[in-house]
Image (cartoon, rainbow, N blue to C red; front, top):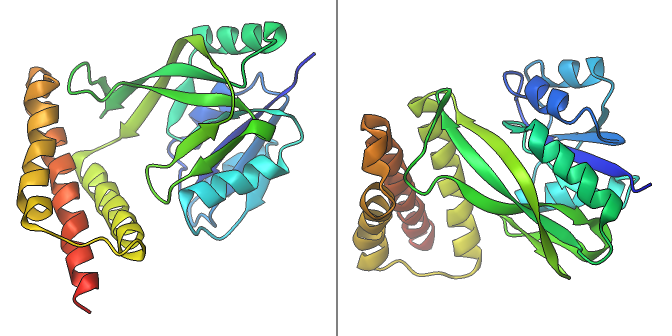
Length: 246
């Protein structure tokens, strides 16, 4: 019987990690790779008897790839601490693992929640690959990292629930953090900043999410979400320009 390891990266996720752990109960192994949390995250992980690995954070891909190498089993499900595996998705994971003969990974649907409420519009729901064979897969990218899978992909039924942010202030703080990491990545690649990056690109990001992807149908929350995403793009290139001018 094919066995599964669920990997959960954490940093100060005491408000989320219990839900993620509970939804991963069916896994043969649960690894939490923690970036030295200062809240109760580690205590919660230990109480749930999950395998705890603490590693200094350098970037998202390196953190996840390190945990993948530590997994006992060949099949991995990567679960963020603010996500939850639904019952239908769990059944689909188990069914496909036991019957799969050709795929090296699987794609699933992820639903986004803000302040406990579903965001139906704005392009925030997406399809991602989270179940994969570790021998044929690795993460790439410093921020907004993606999994590279060498082989065919199947599809899972059910949804992964993403409880992305508890408040708009928390959302803005995290977007600023991502902007800093992305600016450092672009700086290392010697990316230059133009007027397009500073002004047009942020406006395009807002337009795409709020109008083209119907974010306005989420009401004022849709406006806030689209605006902060646009702000994140502007912040990224502002930081990059500052780095380039040093």
